[in-house]
Image (cartoon, rainbow, N blue to C red; front, side, top):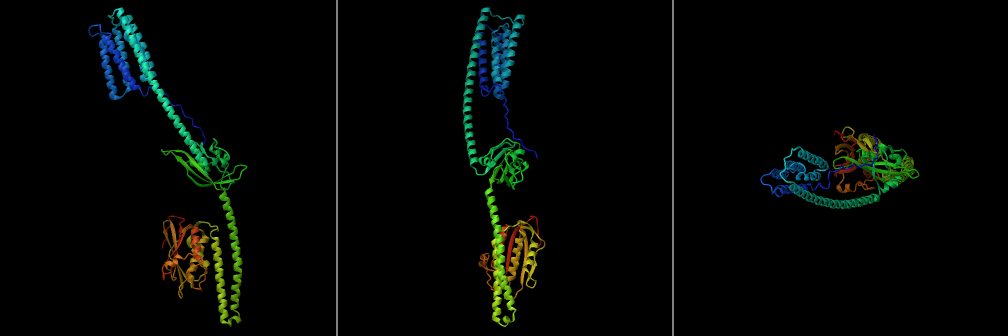
Length: 577
Protein backbone atom coordinates (compact mmCIF):
# COMPACT_ATOMS: atom_id res chain seq x y z
CA UNK A 1 0.00 0.00 0.00
CA UNK A 2 1.54 3.29 -1.11
CA UNK A 3 1.24 6.18 1.31
CA UNK A 4 0.24 9.66 0.21
CA UNK A 5 2.56 12.58 0.77
CA UNK A 6 0.91 15.91 1.35
CA UNK A 7 2.28 18.51 -1.03
CA UNK A 8 1.60 22.14 -1.86
CA UNK A 9 0.78 22.69 -5.51
CA UNK A 10 2.90 25.42 -7.16
CA UNK A 11 1.23 27.08 -10.09
CA UNK A 12 3.55 27.65 -13.05
CA UNK A 13 3.84 31.01 -14.78
CA UNK A 14 1.63 31.54 -17.76
CA UNK A 15 3.45 32.17 -21.05
CA UNK A 16 3.62 35.85 -21.93
CA UNK A 17 2.07 37.10 -25.14
CA UNK A 18 3.99 39.14 -27.68
CA UNK A 19 1.79 42.22 -27.30
CA UNK A 20 -1.17 41.75 -24.97
CA UNK A 21 -2.13 45.43 -25.21
CA UNK A 22 -2.97 45.20 -28.91
CA UNK A 23 -4.33 41.67 -29.05
CA UNK A 24 -7.93 42.86 -29.35
CA UNK A 25 -7.18 45.87 -31.63
CA UNK A 26 -4.84 44.57 -34.35
CA UNK A 27 -7.57 44.59 -36.98
CA UNK A 28 -8.23 48.29 -36.37
CA UNK A 29 -4.50 49.05 -36.57
CA UNK A 30 -4.24 47.06 -39.83
CA UNK A 31 -6.94 49.16 -41.48
CA UNK A 32 -5.41 52.42 -40.18
CA UNK A 33 -1.94 51.46 -41.43
CA UNK A 34 -3.34 50.52 -44.84
CA UNK A 35 -5.21 53.84 -45.00
CA UNK A 36 -2.03 55.81 -44.12
CA UNK A 37 -0.03 53.88 -46.74
CA UNK A 38 -2.65 54.71 -49.37
CA UNK A 39 -2.56 58.39 -48.31
CA UNK A 40 1.26 58.49 -48.54
CA UNK A 41 1.27 56.81 -51.95
CA UNK A 42 -1.30 59.31 -53.22
CA UNK A 43 0.89 62.19 -52.00
CA UNK A 44 3.98 60.69 -53.63
CA UNK A 45 2.18 59.94 -56.86
CA UNK A 46 0.00 63.04 -57.29
CA UNK A 47 1.19 65.92 -55.12
CA UNK A 48 4.97 65.36 -55.17
CA UNK A 49 5.08 64.21 -58.79
CA UNK A 50 2.67 66.84 -60.01
CA UNK A 51 5.33 68.98 -61.80
CA UNK A 52 6.84 66.00 -63.63
CA UNK A 53 5.10 65.19 -66.93
CA UNK A 54 4.19 61.67 -68.06
CA UNK A 55 4.11 58.31 -66.34
CA UNK A 56 7.25 58.45 -64.28
CA UNK A 57 8.66 55.44 -62.48
CA UNK A 58 7.45 56.69 -59.05
CA UNK A 59 3.98 57.13 -60.47
CA UNK A 60 3.97 53.60 -61.90
CA UNK A 61 5.24 52.26 -58.56
CA UNK A 62 2.56 54.24 -56.72
CA UNK A 63 -0.27 52.91 -58.87
CA UNK A 64 1.02 49.33 -58.48
CA UNK A 65 1.23 49.88 -54.70
CA UNK A 66 -2.38 51.13 -54.60
CA UNK A 67 -3.56 48.05 -56.49
CA UNK A 68 -1.58 45.81 -54.14
CA UNK A 69 -3.02 47.53 -51.07
CA UNK A 70 -6.53 47.06 -52.41
CA UNK A 71 -5.82 43.37 -53.11
CA UNK A 72 -4.42 42.85 -49.60
CA UNK A 73 -7.55 44.35 -48.01
CA UNK A 74 -9.77 42.10 -50.18
CA UNK A 75 -7.63 39.07 -49.25
CA UNK A 76 -8.03 39.81 -45.54
CA UNK A 77 -11.78 40.35 -45.84
CA UNK A 78 -12.14 36.95 -47.50
CA UNK A 79 -9.74 34.85 -45.39
CA UNK A 80 -9.51 36.73 -42.06
CA UNK A 81 -5.80 35.82 -42.02
CA UNK A 82 -4.48 38.97 -40.32
CA UNK A 83 -0.84 37.86 -40.01
CA UNK A 84 -0.52 36.94 -43.68
CA UNK A 85 -2.24 40.17 -44.73
CA UNK A 86 0.10 42.21 -42.48
CA UNK A 87 3.20 40.50 -43.95
CA UNK A 88 1.94 41.22 -47.47
CA UNK A 89 1.22 44.85 -46.53
CA UNK A 90 4.71 45.49 -45.09
CA UNK A 91 6.38 43.59 -47.95
CA UNK A 92 4.53 45.72 -50.50
CA UNK A 93 5.55 48.89 -48.66
CA UNK A 94 9.24 47.84 -48.67
CA UNK A 95 9.15 46.78 -52.31
CA UNK A 96 7.48 50.02 -53.46
CA UNK A 97 9.81 52.23 -51.37
CA UNK A 98 12.99 50.53 -52.57
CA UNK A 99 11.85 50.55 -56.21
CA UNK A 100 10.89 54.25 -56.04
CA UNK A 101 14.22 55.04 -54.38
CA UNK A 102 16.20 53.27 -57.12
CA UNK A 103 14.17 55.18 -59.73
CA UNK A 104 15.03 58.45 -57.91
CA UNK A 105 18.76 57.98 -57.81
CA UNK A 106 19.13 55.71 -54.76
CA UNK A 107 19.93 57.13 -51.34
CA UNK A 108 18.99 59.68 -50.11
CA UNK A 109 15.70 59.26 -52.00
CA UNK A 110 12.55 60.65 -50.30
CA UNK A 111 10.86 57.26 -50.13
CA UNK A 112 13.67 55.89 -47.92
CA UNK A 113 12.48 58.21 -45.16
CA UNK A 114 9.73 55.64 -44.50
CA UNK A 115 12.16 52.76 -43.93
CA UNK A 116 12.67 53.53 -40.19
CA UNK A 117 8.90 53.85 -39.82
CA UNK A 118 8.08 50.31 -41.09
CA UNK A 119 9.60 48.41 -38.10
CA UNK A 120 7.17 50.26 -35.83
CA UNK A 121 4.26 49.01 -37.93
CA UNK A 122 5.66 45.48 -38.01
CA UNK A 123 5.99 45.49 -34.21
CA UNK A 124 2.43 46.69 -33.74
CA UNK A 125 0.87 44.22 -36.20
CA UNK A 126 3.11 41.15 -35.84
CA UNK A 127 5.03 41.47 -32.57
CA UNK A 128 8.57 42.18 -31.38
CA UNK A 129 10.26 39.49 -33.47
CA UNK A 130 8.72 40.81 -36.68
CA UNK A 131 9.74 44.34 -35.63
CA UNK A 132 13.39 43.30 -35.27
CA UNK A 133 13.32 41.57 -38.65
CA UNK A 134 11.76 44.68 -40.20
CA UNK A 135 14.47 46.87 -38.61
CA UNK A 136 17.17 44.73 -40.20
CA UNK A 137 15.37 44.95 -43.57
CA UNK A 138 15.14 48.75 -43.27
CA UNK A 139 18.84 49.06 -42.52
CA UNK A 140 19.66 46.74 -45.40
CA UNK A 141 17.42 48.75 -47.74
CA UNK A 142 19.16 52.03 -46.85
CA UNK A 143 22.61 50.46 -47.25
CA UNK A 144 21.63 48.88 -50.56
CA UNK A 145 20.18 52.13 -51.97
CA UNK A 146 23.24 54.08 -50.82
CA UNK A 147 25.49 51.56 -52.54
CA UNK A 148 23.31 51.78 -55.67
CA UNK A 149 23.62 55.59 -55.73
CA UNK A 150 27.44 55.44 -55.46
CA UNK A 151 27.96 52.74 -58.06
CA UNK A 152 25.52 54.13 -60.57
CA UNK A 153 23.20 51.10 -60.28
CA UNK A 154 20.30 53.42 -59.45
CA UNK A 155 18.64 55.46 -62.20
CA UNK A 156 19.78 59.10 -62.30
CA UNK A 157 17.16 61.44 -60.81
CA UNK A 158 15.87 64.19 -63.04
CA UNK A 159 15.32 66.50 -60.06
CA UNK A 160 17.58 69.42 -59.28
CA UNK A 161 19.21 69.80 -55.87
CA UNK A 162 16.56 72.33 -54.86
CA UNK A 163 13.77 69.98 -55.91
CA UNK A 164 15.35 67.11 -54.02
CA UNK A 165 15.63 69.33 -50.92
CA UNK A 166 11.93 70.17 -51.21
CA UNK A 167 11.03 66.50 -51.71
CA UNK A 168 13.11 65.45 -48.71
CA UNK A 169 11.54 68.13 -46.55
CA UNK A 170 8.04 67.14 -47.64
CA UNK A 171 8.77 63.46 -46.98
CA UNK A 172 10.10 64.36 -43.53
CA UNK A 173 6.96 66.30 -42.73
CA UNK A 174 4.78 63.39 -43.89
CA UNK A 175 6.89 60.98 -41.83
CA UNK A 176 6.48 63.17 -38.75
CA UNK A 177 2.73 63.34 -39.31
CA UNK A 178 2.56 59.55 -39.71
CA UNK A 179 4.63 58.85 -36.59
CA UNK A 180 2.60 61.35 -34.58
CA UNK A 181 -0.64 59.72 -35.78
CA UNK A 182 0.63 56.32 -34.80
CA UNK A 183 1.73 57.67 -31.44
CA UNK A 184 -1.78 59.01 -30.81
CA UNK A 185 -3.32 55.71 -31.94
CA UNK A 186 -0.94 53.69 -29.79
CA UNK A 187 -1.60 55.96 -26.81
CA UNK A 188 -5.37 55.58 -27.20
CA UNK A 189 -4.99 51.84 -27.41
CA UNK A 190 -2.82 51.79 -24.29
CA UNK A 191 -5.30 53.97 -22.43
CA UNK A 192 -8.12 51.65 -23.48
CA UNK A 193 -6.07 48.66 -22.38
CA UNK A 194 -5.34 50.30 -19.02
CA UNK A 195 -9.03 51.09 -18.57
CA UNK A 196 -9.96 47.49 -19.44
CA UNK A 197 -7.24 46.26 -17.08
CA UNK A 198 -8.54 48.41 -14.24
CA UNK A 199 -12.09 47.21 -14.94
CA UNK A 200 -10.89 43.59 -14.99
CA UNK A 201 -8.91 44.20 -11.79
CA UNK A 202 -11.97 45.68 -10.10
CA UNK A 203 -14.10 42.74 -11.24
CA UNK A 204 -11.42 40.31 -10.05
CA UNK A 205 -11.27 42.03 -6.66
CA UNK A 206 -15.07 41.77 -6.36
CA UNK A 207 -14.95 38.08 -7.21
CA UNK A 208 -12.08 37.56 -4.78
CA UNK A 209 -14.07 39.30 -2.05
CA UNK A 210 -17.13 37.16 -2.87
CA UNK A 211 -14.97 34.03 -2.84
CA UNK A 212 -13.45 34.99 0.50
CA UNK A 213 -16.91 35.64 1.90
CA UNK A 214 -18.11 32.27 0.55
CA UNK A 215 -15.09 30.51 2.06
CA UNK A 216 -15.71 32.24 5.38
CA UNK A 217 -19.37 31.18 5.28
CA UNK A 218 -18.38 27.58 4.42
CA UNK A 219 -15.83 27.58 7.23
CA UNK A 220 -18.47 28.88 9.66
CA UNK A 221 -20.93 26.20 8.55
CA UNK A 222 -18.26 23.50 8.93
CA UNK A 223 -17.32 24.74 12.39
CA UNK A 224 -20.99 24.80 13.41
CA UNK A 225 -21.41 21.13 12.50
CA UNK A 226 -21.60 18.81 15.49
CA UNK A 227 -19.80 16.00 13.65
CA UNK A 228 -16.13 16.21 12.75
CA UNK A 229 -15.53 16.81 9.02
CA UNK A 230 -12.14 16.17 7.42
CA UNK A 231 -11.38 16.46 3.70
CA UNK A 232 -8.22 15.96 1.67
CA UNK A 233 -7.24 16.32 -1.98
CA UNK A 234 -5.95 13.46 -4.11
CA UNK A 235 -2.40 14.18 -2.90
CA UNK A 236 -3.40 13.72 0.73
CA UNK A 237 -3.27 17.42 1.64
CA UNK A 238 -5.89 18.14 4.31
CA UNK A 239 -8.05 21.01 3.07
CA UNK A 240 -10.93 20.89 5.59
CA UNK A 241 -10.49 20.24 9.31
CA UNK A 242 -13.44 21.74 11.17
CA UNK A 243 -13.79 22.77 14.79
CA UNK A 244 -15.17 19.41 15.92
CA UNK A 245 -12.19 17.62 14.31
CA UNK A 246 -9.73 19.97 16.01
CA UNK A 247 -11.46 19.43 19.36
CA UNK A 248 -11.44 15.63 18.98
CA UNK A 249 -7.79 15.33 17.93
CA UNK A 250 -6.47 18.22 19.99
CA UNK A 251 -4.55 19.69 17.00
CA UNK A 252 -5.21 21.35 13.66
CA UNK A 253 -4.51 19.85 10.22
CA UNK A 254 -0.83 19.06 9.63
CA UNK A 255 1.06 18.62 6.29
CA UNK A 256 1.93 14.96 6.81
CA UNK A 257 2.55 11.72 4.96
CA UNK A 258 -0.49 9.45 5.35
CA UNK A 259 1.70 6.93 7.23
CA UNK A 260 1.91 9.47 10.05
CA UNK A 261 -1.85 10.08 10.34
CA UNK A 262 -2.54 7.33 12.95
CA UNK A 263 0.26 8.43 15.30
CA UNK A 264 -0.25 12.18 14.85
CA UNK A 265 -4.03 12.10 15.23
CA UNK A 266 -4.06 9.25 17.84
CA UNK A 267 -6.16 6.84 15.79
CA UNK A 268 -7.00 3.39 17.19
CA UNK A 269 -9.22 0.48 16.28
CA UNK A 270 -12.69 0.18 17.80
CA UNK A 271 -11.31 -1.53 20.93
CA UNK A 272 -9.41 1.66 21.83
CA UNK A 273 -6.21 -0.36 22.36
CA UNK A 274 -4.95 -1.51 18.96
CA UNK A 275 -3.20 1.28 16.99
CA UNK A 276 -4.78 1.74 13.58
CA UNK A 277 -2.67 1.00 10.50
CA UNK A 278 -2.49 3.83 7.99
CA UNK A 279 -4.05 1.71 5.23
CA UNK A 280 -7.11 1.21 7.46
CA UNK A 281 -7.69 4.93 8.07
CA UNK A 282 -11.12 5.67 6.52
CA UNK A 283 -9.99 8.89 4.81
CA UNK A 284 -7.02 7.09 3.24
CA UNK A 285 -9.31 4.31 2.00
CA UNK A 286 -11.63 6.91 0.43
CA UNK A 287 -8.70 8.60 -1.34
CA UNK A 288 -7.97 5.18 -2.84
CA UNK A 289 -11.51 5.18 -4.26
CA UNK A 290 -13.14 2.97 -1.59
CA UNK A 291 -16.32 4.08 0.14
CA UNK A 292 -16.35 3.50 3.90
CA UNK A 293 -19.64 3.22 5.80
CA UNK A 294 -20.23 3.04 9.57
CA UNK A 295 -16.62 2.19 10.49
CA UNK A 296 -15.97 2.09 14.24
CA UNK A 297 -12.73 3.56 15.54
CA UNK A 298 -11.32 5.32 18.60
CA UNK A 299 -9.29 8.48 19.21
CA UNK A 300 -6.99 8.17 22.24
CA UNK A 301 -5.16 11.49 22.68
CA UNK A 302 -2.52 11.20 25.46
CA UNK A 303 -3.76 12.72 28.71
CA UNK A 304 -7.42 12.64 27.61
CA UNK A 305 -10.25 10.13 27.79
CA UNK A 306 -10.73 7.74 24.88
CA UNK A 307 -13.42 8.83 22.45
CA UNK A 308 -15.23 6.36 20.23
CA UNK A 309 -16.29 7.32 16.70
CA UNK A 310 -18.53 6.15 13.87
CA UNK A 311 -16.85 7.16 10.60
CA UNK A 312 -18.17 7.46 7.04
CA UNK A 313 -15.81 8.37 4.18
CA UNK A 314 -16.57 9.00 0.51
CA UNK A 315 -14.32 9.57 -2.55
CA UNK A 316 -14.84 12.85 -4.42
CA UNK A 317 -14.90 13.02 -8.24
CA UNK A 318 -15.07 15.96 -10.65
CA UNK A 319 -17.29 16.24 -13.72
CA UNK A 320 -14.76 14.20 -15.74
CA UNK A 321 -15.02 11.31 -13.25
CA UNK A 322 -11.47 12.01 -12.02
CA UNK A 323 -10.71 11.40 -8.34
CA UNK A 324 -9.97 14.77 -6.75
CA UNK A 325 -9.98 13.84 -3.06
CA UNK A 326 -12.15 12.47 -0.27
CA UNK A 327 -14.22 13.60 2.71
CA UNK A 328 -14.82 11.83 6.02
CA UNK A 329 -17.30 12.54 8.82
CA UNK A 330 -16.83 11.35 12.39
CA UNK A 331 -19.67 11.14 14.89
CA UNK A 332 -18.72 10.92 18.56
CA UNK A 333 -20.61 7.96 20.07
CA UNK A 334 -18.70 7.81 23.34
CA UNK A 335 -21.75 8.63 25.48
CA UNK A 336 -23.94 6.20 23.55
CA UNK A 337 -21.30 3.49 23.90
CA UNK A 338 -21.00 4.04 27.66
CA UNK A 339 -24.78 4.16 28.05
CA UNK A 340 -25.12 1.03 25.94
CA UNK A 341 -22.62 -0.79 28.09
CA UNK A 342 -24.48 0.32 31.21
CA UNK A 343 -27.77 -0.86 29.73
CA UNK A 344 -26.23 -4.22 28.78
CA UNK A 345 -24.88 -4.56 32.32
CA UNK A 346 -28.32 -3.77 33.78
CA UNK A 347 -29.95 -6.19 31.35
CA UNK A 348 -27.57 -8.93 32.45
CA UNK A 349 -28.51 -8.23 36.06
CA UNK A 350 -32.25 -8.28 35.19
CA UNK A 351 -31.78 -11.50 33.23
CA UNK A 352 -29.95 -13.08 36.14
CA UNK A 353 -32.68 -11.91 38.53
CA UNK A 354 -35.37 -13.36 36.24
CA UNK A 355 -33.61 -16.71 36.20
CA UNK A 356 -33.32 -16.76 39.99
CA UNK A 357 -36.91 -15.55 40.40
CA UNK A 358 -38.10 -18.26 38.04
CA UNK A 359 -36.44 -20.93 40.14
CA UNK A 360 -37.71 -19.40 43.41
CA UNK A 361 -41.28 -19.18 42.07
CA UNK A 362 -41.25 -22.61 40.48
CA UNK A 363 -40.02 -24.38 43.63
CA UNK A 364 -43.21 -23.88 45.73
CA UNK A 365 -45.41 -24.80 42.77
CA UNK A 366 -43.44 -27.97 42.17
CA UNK A 367 -43.85 -28.83 45.88
CA UNK A 368 -47.60 -28.27 45.61
CA UNK A 369 -47.84 -30.46 42.50
CA UNK A 370 -45.76 -33.26 44.04
CA UNK A 371 -47.76 -33.14 47.29
CA UNK A 372 -51.09 -33.15 45.47
CA UNK A 373 -50.11 -36.08 43.27
CA UNK A 374 -48.84 -37.97 46.33
CA UNK A 375 -52.05 -37.35 48.29
CA UNK A 376 -54.26 -38.55 45.42
CA UNK A 377 -52.56 -41.94 45.61
CA UNK A 378 -53.14 -42.34 49.39
CA UNK A 379 -55.97 -44.76 50.55
CA UNK A 380 -57.73 -42.01 52.49
CA UNK A 381 -58.06 -39.78 49.47
CA UNK A 382 -58.98 -42.62 47.12
CA UNK A 383 -62.07 -43.19 49.21
CA UNK A 384 -63.35 -39.65 48.62
CA UNK A 385 -64.22 -38.75 44.99
CA UNK A 386 -64.69 -35.05 45.83
CA UNK A 387 -61.27 -34.85 47.48
CA UNK A 388 -59.64 -36.48 44.43
CA UNK A 389 -61.33 -33.99 42.11
CA UNK A 390 -60.24 -31.07 44.26
CA UNK A 391 -56.62 -32.27 44.39
CA UNK A 392 -56.61 -32.81 40.61
CA UNK A 393 -57.85 -29.24 40.16
CA UNK A 394 -55.09 -27.99 42.47
CA UNK A 395 -52.47 -29.90 40.46
CA UNK A 396 -53.78 -28.53 37.15
CA UNK A 397 -53.89 -24.97 38.49
CA UNK A 398 -50.35 -25.28 39.83
CA UNK A 399 -49.11 -26.54 36.46
CA UNK A 400 -50.86 -23.66 34.69
CA UNK A 401 -49.34 -21.21 37.16
CA UNK A 402 -45.89 -22.74 36.53
CA UNK A 403 -46.31 -22.40 32.76
CA UNK A 404 -47.50 -18.82 33.18
CA UNK A 405 -44.51 -17.89 35.37
CA UNK A 406 -42.12 -19.50 32.91
CA UNK A 407 -43.63 -17.68 29.90
CA UNK A 408 -43.89 -14.33 31.68
CA UNK A 409 -40.23 -14.44 32.69
CA UNK A 410 -39.20 -15.62 29.21
CA UNK A 411 -41.18 -12.81 27.57
CA UNK A 412 -39.75 -10.23 29.99
CA UNK A 413 -36.24 -11.23 28.93
CA UNK A 414 -36.97 -11.02 25.20
CA UNK A 415 -36.24 -7.28 24.75
CA UNK A 416 -33.01 -7.42 26.80
CA UNK A 417 -31.69 -10.88 26.12
CA UNK A 418 -28.74 -11.24 23.77
CA UNK A 419 -29.34 -12.95 20.45
CA UNK A 420 -26.86 -14.30 17.95
CA UNK A 421 -28.04 -13.97 14.35
CA UNK A 422 -26.30 -16.54 12.17
CA UNK A 423 -27.02 -19.00 9.35
CA UNK A 424 -29.29 -21.68 10.83
CA UNK A 425 -30.68 -24.89 9.29
CA UNK A 426 -34.41 -24.44 9.99
CA UNK A 427 -35.17 -28.16 9.89
CA UNK A 428 -32.66 -28.80 12.68
CA UNK A 429 -34.52 -26.26 14.83
CA UNK A 430 -37.86 -27.95 14.08
CA UNK A 431 -36.51 -31.38 15.05
CA UNK A 432 -34.99 -29.93 18.24
CA UNK A 433 -38.38 -28.35 19.06
CA UNK A 434 -40.13 -31.72 18.56
CA UNK A 435 -37.72 -33.33 21.00
CA UNK A 436 -38.30 -30.59 23.60
CA UNK A 437 -42.10 -30.85 23.31
CA UNK A 438 -42.03 -34.49 24.59
CA UNK A 439 -44.99 -35.48 22.45
CA UNK A 440 -45.56 -39.05 21.29
CA UNK A 441 -46.95 -40.08 17.91
CA UNK A 442 -50.17 -40.96 19.69
CA UNK A 443 -50.47 -37.43 21.07
CA UNK A 444 -49.77 -35.54 17.84
CA UNK A 445 -48.91 -36.60 14.32
CA UNK A 446 -46.16 -34.50 12.76
CA UNK A 447 -45.54 -34.36 8.99
CA UNK A 448 -43.00 -32.48 6.88
CA UNK A 449 -44.35 -31.16 3.59
CA UNK A 450 -40.94 -30.13 2.24
CA UNK A 451 -37.51 -31.64 1.75
CA UNK A 452 -34.12 -30.18 2.41
CA UNK A 453 -33.14 -27.72 5.07
CA UNK A 454 -32.86 -24.09 3.92
CA UNK A 455 -30.53 -21.93 5.98
CA UNK A 456 -31.98 -18.70 7.33
CA UNK A 457 -30.48 -15.85 9.33
CA UNK A 458 -31.83 -16.35 12.86
CA UNK A 459 -30.98 -17.07 16.49
CA UNK A 460 -31.01 -20.89 16.91
CA UNK A 461 -32.42 -20.91 20.46
CA UNK A 462 -35.16 -18.39 19.71
CA UNK A 463 -36.22 -20.15 16.49
CA UNK A 464 -36.35 -23.52 18.26
CA UNK A 465 -38.52 -22.01 21.00
CA UNK A 466 -40.90 -20.57 18.36
CA UNK A 467 -41.40 -23.96 16.71
CA UNK A 468 -41.84 -25.63 20.12
CA UNK A 469 -44.61 -23.16 21.00
CA UNK A 470 -46.38 -23.80 17.68
CA UNK A 471 -46.17 -27.60 18.08
CA UNK A 472 -47.56 -27.42 21.63
CA UNK A 473 -50.24 -25.00 20.42
CA UNK A 474 -51.38 -27.56 17.80
CA UNK A 475 -51.54 -30.31 20.44
CA UNK A 476 -53.28 -28.23 23.16
CA UNK A 477 -56.02 -26.92 20.90
CA UNK A 478 -56.86 -30.01 18.89
CA UNK A 479 -60.56 -30.79 18.36
CA UNK A 480 -62.19 -33.17 20.91
CA UNK A 481 -61.89 -36.82 19.97
CA UNK A 482 -59.47 -36.07 17.11
CA UNK A 483 -55.72 -36.77 17.29
CA UNK A 484 -53.72 -33.59 16.94
CA UNK A 485 -51.95 -33.15 13.61
CA UNK A 486 -49.30 -30.58 12.61
CA UNK A 487 -47.81 -30.11 9.16
CA UNK A 488 -44.57 -28.21 8.50
CA UNK A 489 -44.47 -26.26 5.22
CA UNK A 490 -41.85 -24.08 3.54
CA UNK A 491 -41.66 -21.94 0.39
CA UNK A 492 -38.95 -19.61 -0.94
CA UNK A 493 -39.96 -16.15 -2.15
CA UNK A 494 -38.25 -12.76 -2.54
CA UNK A 495 -35.00 -13.82 -0.86
CA UNK A 496 -36.75 -15.21 2.23
CA UNK A 497 -37.99 -18.56 3.54
CA UNK A 498 -41.64 -18.71 4.65
CA UNK A 499 -42.20 -21.57 7.08
CA UNK A 500 -45.58 -22.74 8.29
CA UNK A 501 -47.07 -24.93 11.02
CA UNK A 502 -50.60 -26.01 10.06
CA UNK A 503 -52.84 -27.70 12.64
CA UNK A 504 -56.22 -29.46 12.45
CA UNK A 505 -57.85 -27.48 15.23
CA UNK A 506 -61.21 -25.65 15.13
CA UNK A 507 -59.78 -22.61 13.35
CA UNK A 508 -60.56 -18.94 14.02
CA UNK A 509 -62.62 -16.10 12.66
CA UNK A 510 -61.06 -12.83 11.51
CA UNK A 511 -62.23 -11.11 14.71
CA UNK A 512 -60.43 -13.72 16.77
CA UNK A 513 -57.29 -13.35 14.64
CA UNK A 514 -57.26 -9.60 15.33
CA UNK A 515 -56.93 -10.33 19.08
CA UNK A 516 -54.71 -13.36 18.73
CA UNK A 517 -51.38 -11.80 19.66
CA UNK A 518 -52.59 -9.87 22.70
CA UNK A 519 -50.56 -10.97 25.72
CA UNK A 520 -52.32 -13.13 28.36
CA UNK A 521 -55.36 -13.59 26.12
CA UNK A 522 -56.54 -17.04 25.09
CA UNK A 523 -59.24 -17.23 22.48
CA UNK A 524 -59.90 -20.91 23.08
CA UNK A 525 -61.15 -20.82 26.62
CA UNK A 526 -61.46 -24.54 27.39
CA UNK A 527 -60.37 -24.91 31.00
CA UNK A 528 -58.50 -28.16 30.47
CA UNK A 529 -56.12 -26.64 27.92
CA UNK A 530 -52.82 -25.97 29.58
CA UNK A 531 -51.10 -22.75 28.60
CA UNK A 532 -50.41 -19.18 29.64
CA UNK A 533 -51.84 -17.25 26.71
CA UNK A 534 -48.37 -15.87 25.96
CA UNK A 535 -47.05 -18.45 23.51
CA UNK A 536 -48.08 -16.73 20.27
CA UNK A 537 -47.13 -13.27 21.56
CA UNK A 538 -43.68 -14.69 22.36
CA UNK A 539 -43.45 -16.11 18.85
CA UNK A 540 -44.24 -12.74 17.28
CA UNK A 541 -41.76 -10.80 19.47
CA UNK A 542 -39.05 -13.39 18.81
CA UNK A 543 -39.52 -13.14 15.05
CA UNK A 544 -39.45 -9.33 15.21
CA UNK A 545 -36.08 -9.45 17.03
CA UNK A 546 -34.72 -11.64 14.22
CA UNK A 547 -35.96 -9.19 11.51
CA UNK A 548 -38.70 -11.65 10.59
CA UNK A 549 -42.50 -11.66 10.33
CA UNK A 550 -45.18 -13.79 11.99
CA UNK A 551 -48.86 -14.12 11.09
CA UNK A 552 -51.73 -16.65 10.92
CA UNK A 553 -54.10 -17.74 8.17
CA UNK A 554 -57.31 -19.44 9.33
CA UNK A 555 -61.04 -19.96 8.84
CA UNK A 556 -63.53 -21.47 11.31
CA UNK A 557 -63.44 -25.28 11.10
CA UNK A 558 -60.34 -25.29 8.84
CA UNK A 559 -57.56 -25.21 11.44
CA UNK A 560 -54.82 -22.58 11.68
CA UNK A 561 -51.76 -22.10 9.48
CA UNK A 562 -49.13 -20.13 11.43
CA UNK A 563 -46.57 -18.57 9.03
CA UNK A 564 -43.15 -17.07 9.74
CA UNK A 565 -40.81 -15.33 7.29
CA UNK A 566 -37.01 -15.12 7.77
CA UNK A 567 -34.27 -13.87 5.42
CA UNK A 568 -32.28 -16.57 3.63
CA UNK A 569 -28.60 -16.96 4.42
CA UNK A 570 -28.06 -17.99 0.80
CA UNK A 571 -30.12 -15.96 -1.65
CA UNK A 572 -29.81 -18.74 -4.27
CA UNK A 573 -31.35 -21.41 -2.02
CA UNK A 574 -34.18 -23.55 -3.36
CA UNK A 575 -36.65 -25.88 -1.64
CA UNK A 576 -38.67 -28.83 -2.89
CA UNK A 577 -42.24 -29.23 -1.69
